[in-house]
Amino acid sequence: MSDESNDPILARSQKVLVGAAPEKVAVVLVEYDPTWPRRFEFERQRIEAALGGRALSVEHIGSTSVVGLVAKPIIDICVVVEDSADEASYIPDLEAAGYELRVREPDWHEHRMLRTAAHDVHVHVFTRGSSEIDRHLVFRDRLRANAADRELYASTKWALAQQDWLTMQHYADAKTDVVEAILTSASISSLNQFATSRSHHVNKNFSQAIALRCDDPLPIIELLEQWDVDQASTDIMGYMGTRLLADRENPGQYLIVADFGVVDPDVSAVDEANRNNERPETQAWAARLLELIDGDPQYRHYDELYRTDF
Image (cartoon, rainbow, N blue to C red; front, side):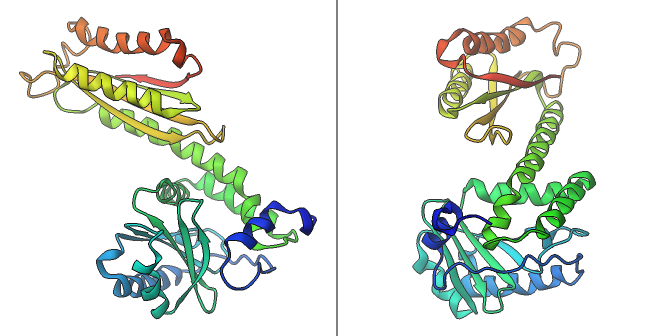
């Protein structure tokens, strides 16, 4: 057990918790309960009745949302609102519906967590567009779809549950490495799916997708977006799809995924015969972009991790 007088997790908990001090509770895991989806549905209706259209999204997250996964018997719910920092716009109504505010984190995605009096439902509130929303959903969907990652997560939880933890947050933080590994697997999988789906885009005669690792995503995104704008004014109609993913293997770094190609306005379907071989200008367009990235000292710390041509 860590020294409580010099424990950053405990200090953080004391800062963000509302009401009672951090609670030392045993980590009790149970086998999947088929009643959990029904309990979520009950809570979803209660939240939507309280907030109406202010609840932009209400999703079941956490281990109880994954069929077959062991879990603490606590229903975790992600609620998206316009601005989670604007507590007056939703917290009084949720409190009237039976939830109590337990966590306030203005410095971390403006996260708020409310819970039931029985502590068996946790409602996590985020602002529309927060990256944490997608992170929760990607993690949930990966565990639902991938048996190996589901088993990895379950075995990790069982092992950690045997240990003594100062607070539940200490237990949660101890799962970070395996969570990041699973999210990395999900990111790689989504890159492949993204590239495959893009390869069938109508009117496209050439496409290439690349991923770059970087510690500052903004310059490269701006470069890619500007390239798209520049190409739009030429006789080769260009388009650019750019995605930003956190690099789960290297905290503080990011994956930039760029899909670029051309659209010929005179072709109503993919021209397979001319797609690569007879349209050198489309290949040159992709090559010029890569040369621009490779040749500018500003971008030399970007490492290409993944590329697919189709």
